[in-house]
Image (cartoon, rainbow, N blue to C red):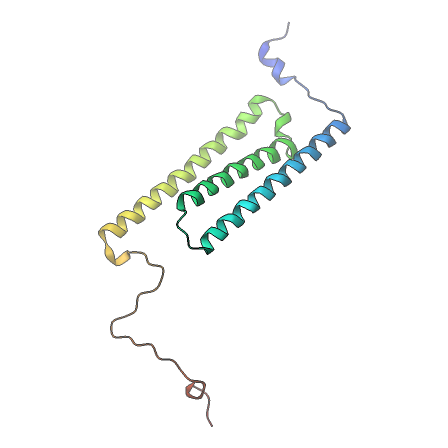
Length: 154
């Protein structure tokens, strides 16, 4: 009698060539459909930004949907094209668990960096972020005419 722990290790999953091609074709079509949906959502977000309407919640919702669709695409690519779906459960966990920890690590650093930025802007106004550079005191803007440009002499 074989020990239950070794049943998983000795598991061999063989599919015929036609079944594998059908699976790859199905996954390719699914990934193409998800990509077209993502592009459509991206164009919708772009048009909302161009129209200058206040739809921040809807834009945030669309961005969340795009993130979920991207994760679904990553799952299918890793599962089918990289053959991780055919591996034993312990091998899958060896790859997935560190990946989840790495995603948590990135999220924690983004959260911490955003907190630092907000605290720095709140307590030290010198570092407050702006989208346009501030003008210096007493600085005037001078427009140069082509005749006044340096290096041009008549």
